Picture 1: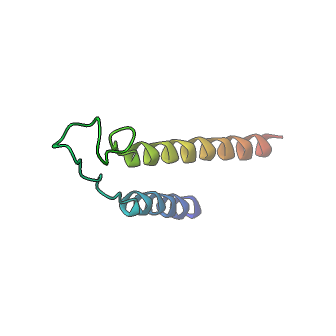
Picture 2: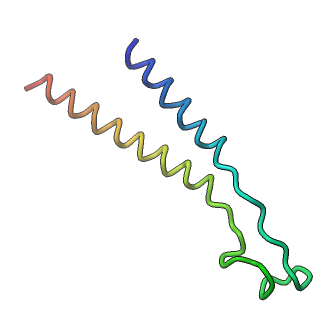
Length: 77
């Protein structure tokens, strides 16, 4: 039951971060849509929020596996 509560808490935390990571819209171009000038940021304003959530989720899963393996090995020894 304790593991289930921690899993639920971790899931809620990850979902909260994905919901709260809002990005501002890119600034408008001054030259009618061509990305070569105006106020367009480097990279064209590509969103990185989804990849960041994926990276955090994978890191949490990897860390959880390492902790599980450590505790499992500790019980055997």
